[in-house]
Length: 258
Image 1 (cartoon, rainbow, N blue to C red):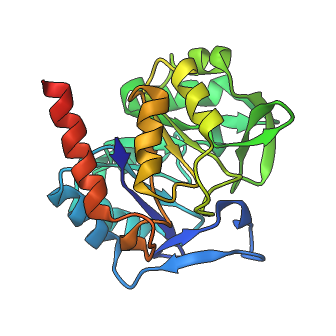
Image 2: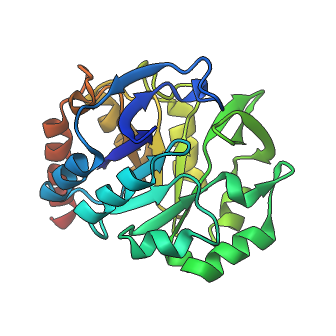
């Protein structure tokens, strides 16, 4: 299934090369800056009945735009970026279906059990999504935090996902090494995620064509969803038509009802 996204940077809807996002903005590579507000995209997704999409705040200065998007599609979008146990409930009250959390639940390179428990207490397991965005190192994938610049010691695998699945409803995984490059998905990671996780997983990174959406569905047996960013025509891309993604979802949903 296709899941939509709204990436916010400095209050605007943008598509960036994920691995270049650093504090201070040095070296940032931007693929697209929209003239339309975040609420326009949210209203579009609502009109086309797309669920499970996410709004990600890439740094400060995005709260107003994020709230406008959530108000345009209440209960239809997840919200991530700067979420912690203190503000998570407020984002749900603003209209988010779930909150997405990554960096805040990691300390000293490891999952912090106390912080994770505080999040679950604040919003409930069923409304928490853990972002396990990762980069390849050696023969494995390791979670990276803090604008995807800081390596953790947590290696993605069945044991970690099983442990974390007790505390959340879904996982979101950006393949940071291919994020924003439009050179194709990381097929190895997609296949492994479908085998490792018992929870819904959304994969993001590298999608360049509708064939990638079909390939993710095939590799995972429909157990992993795909977010498409820079290649999408509504984000200035030429590889994928948004209308084709909507049509794909409708065909997939119809096939599941048969």
